[in-house]
Image 1 (cartoon, one colour):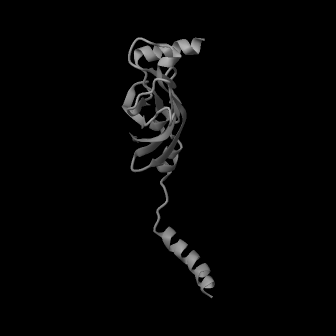
Image 2: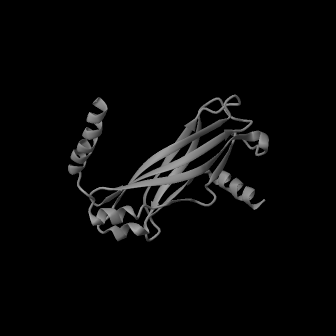
Image 3: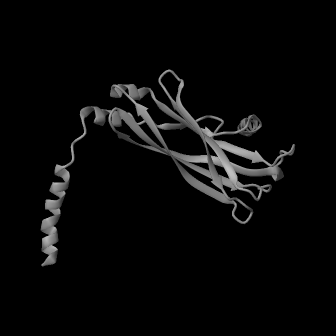
Length: 179
């Protein structure tokens, strides 16, 4: 008997809940289709960090990191596209991993239609790596807001992501790719 009451009550409650919801405007629906796909910057997809000093052989590696995936979700709210960017960062301890926190630097840049940086920020993914705990992985979530006047303005935006190597680490990445 109580089961019947719930079956009857569920459609009524659903109808009441939906009656309070307004539909999205045409501009909001169109703007939502312009959700910018992230791309990985060449030479900034991986990072090999060495212990301090001159050594650069495999025994000197403190950690290696990589961006292993990205994704976005978008929502429109009052002439703003709200972008939730998710970046998966993975790190592996090297033979020279330190006892301190391992901090993997990465960046996010919102690129406008002219190729300029409209928004940008640097971040760190932090791990406690050791020889006993040699792997770390996280999903970093970043919120971006893109204002627009007309939805078609959003079509020109792109989201660039990458790890942030030092100049020496960047050169190491380039040499490793060339091999």
